[in-house]
Length: 162
Ligand SMILES: [Zn+2]
Image (tube, rainbow, N blue to C red; front, side, top):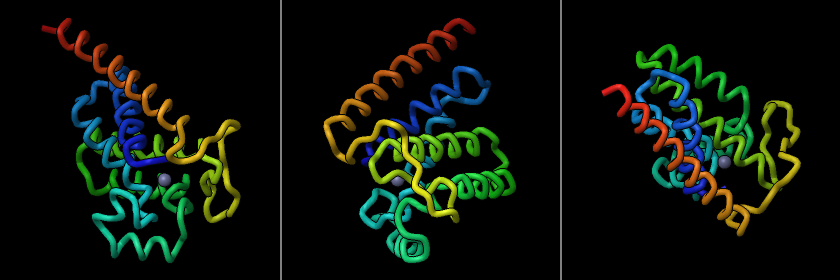
């Protein structure tokens, strides 16, 4: 999936979680966007890959595209790392939500992801599409609508507390 779809995916996941938690929605969303871009560090042409070309090259030559950085193992390790070094729980949760949304969205592509890395099987959803396709645009639009809906819900909740 393309960077913008991942960004809106991270926003949707964070806002959905904000409905059921006391974490600050803005912190969740900010962290969610970062998390949503993080897994594509393995891909030099991605938004984050272009910002950090050296790390991106290293990760790509070590693991290839959509393997380690799109796996449950990476999610788990990042969770441990963030939990240890970042004292703000909301940031950790937001980043992990964004990463999980990224992996889920990429599972909706034909190539799938190496979810169980180092086991090298590709996992994909029953229905898949091509990156940049019309279907991806539909997914992008639906996620945007969901985000708007969740934002509305949060604003209503906030207003109720005043
Ligand atoms: Zn990806």
